[in-house]
Length: 244
View 1 (cartoon, one colour):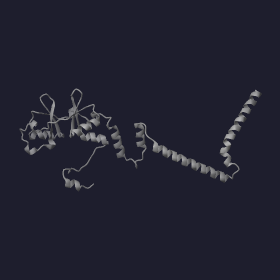
View 2: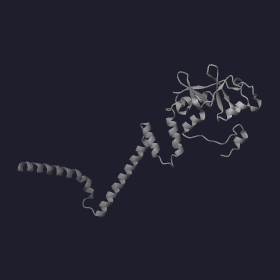
View 3: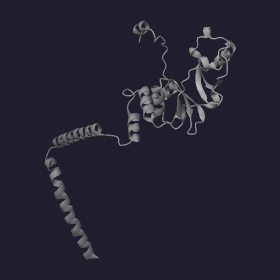
View 4: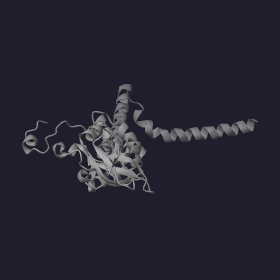
């Protein structure tokens, strides 16, 4: 036991000497110096270290590239509101998720649609009933119960409509369709290339599921409703003199 203890003690002594020898150069500049000078040296070293650390962190941030959507979202959330407002955050959020969402998200169900038949007549009484529904667009069904047109009551010239005016004479014949599994990006493309604000949504079996409107898709894209009370867009004078 004594032999083993001596061996252990000798080993520890050798290790301590090596450790002191390795650390001596680091502390040599502090030896045999007044306390004030040594303290100043330590402060200078600390300041230099902090400066190098700050520079390294800055370089890391400048060169940092998020590797996933989750990391990007976290960066956006950490960004001060003075730099990125709530409105801008919503805009980024809506744009990031836009292409992943499906048309059914903005589809109003078929049960909410008020249909007309191609054999109907639109007189003042029937028009009054349509106005009281709150809608302005009404799909028209043919004898096969397929949509063959649209009646837009907000574009009708009421002075020129008689009580025996058939629906087929005043309806729009172009009807635009989109499928329920379209992404919102695909659905927006349908609106744009057909210059319309109203699309009927169907499934793969051509069953009518409902309808979608352009303003709803735009609201999803910007993550907020787009409002503007100005309505004189057809007047160049009004547009040019509009106060912003």
